[in-house]
Image (cartoon, rainbow, N blue to C red; front, side, top):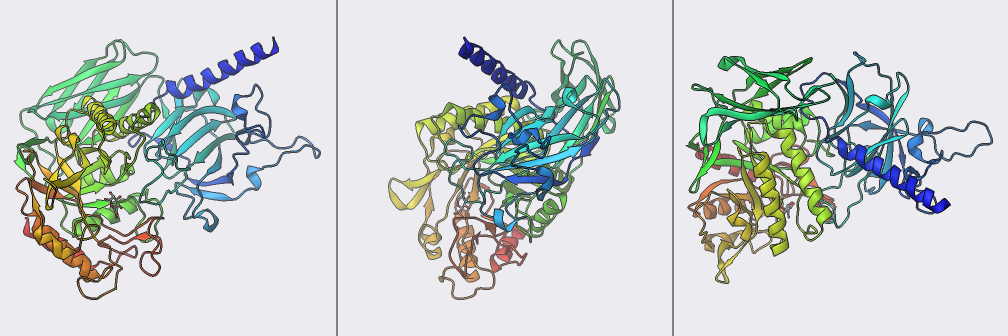
Length: 610
Ligand code: GCU
């Protein structure tokens, strides 16, 4: 009898936790909402054995009828001098949030495991009928979130935003928000065990409290119809109690548009505005329209650029005119300091270097970067490739892995779908072709097209030998039939022969689609000089760029490139002493901001393309 009661209560607890975390897809478009920042110093406890999450029988405290005081998320203190409690957040050290833990504490540089954060705060709702959400810009990799000892939910994925409603759990004073972040790499993860970047762990982006009216504008999407640029289409979605027949106003003053809408029973209203004259968003004129969306007590101001991005044969058309993507790949690392980038200052430095090189395009590899960099690209007139971290040897047959990849893609598109600078959603990077993999990626592409009919789909595809001839290359990837842009990485002259091999290579690409070289490059230690066939010299890297640019020019469908990579970046795979020392050296700029000779080679080429 006892065991039945126990099992029933276990089932009820589990289902409530799942319901709680599943029911709130999370508030989005927080950028323009008034908020209360929780950035700053958070207490932390390193917990490699997850002693604060499981009892010694490896049963999760949160699944017990009474989690007891040893569960770290209860933030318990002894009631009397005899009581045994073996942790204390208040007596623990602090970490800066946002920020990875690796570069804040020497002892955490290589740490991969669980670490608990705690932040206390007071909060009073401005209006008692309002709602309150806690919003995380990102936290790598798996985050279990609790408020005042109650589980809010679990988020998996290290590069997309998530949030939970905390209205009903809020105290006026001394709320304690506790997060267990676990950055252990796992085979069925997205990304999987093996990557060529540093596994920065922690609450790596901003945390804020967002107060909303009881019914609020939770989502909206406005875009120019790619096939008919005289129509702005999209939707507005309310969230809350009063959803049906609610009035919404969409205003675009520069277009003298005021569009009254009425929601359906789900709080959804379609947008379809006919606009004759519109100032496009473009590289030369990145004009952003002020858009004001209001409904009931809620009002959101947004800056949206209207443009079309399409393909025609092997051309990429921006607002109907061909564009050549003069790009560079970028990892999200803090310039000069290393560590996960997350600020406007980081974004401004990286994009300014790209602009100095003559770029009109950046490939944000290999995962969603922070929101600052895409909003800054909107303002600077830079085109953007954003990528889901489906990288290398993903567990293609695992349905949970697919669900994870699909959710992260949905979270990315949900966050950035109103950013004119973003023109390409990349499904993956360098994934070994198989039926399971191509089905996995095809399903992701269907999801992306369903959420967003206004952008192009790509991925770093597989390329290989044509008729088994080592000197003739082609794209032999079945996913090529699905994507809009044929992108691929090629390292002839670095992983495949030397740079003097490049002038022997021919390309035979059958598909009549735009071709984008998503990566090529060579490692060079800044300041190391020698002849052009001596590895790791700047001259080798420079020679490879010169020869690669010539070779790529022989591809008739070539419409752009994003060489690997703007800046040297940390990778545990790169251990050559005196040369790499834990850094991937393919940057055109060193981690200290020094430009290598190949920087000027690419700059000269891009300037010649004007
Ligand atoms: C691959 C991969 C990158 C990696 C690069 C390299 O193309 O996409 O993530 O860093 O090669 O080997 O430097």
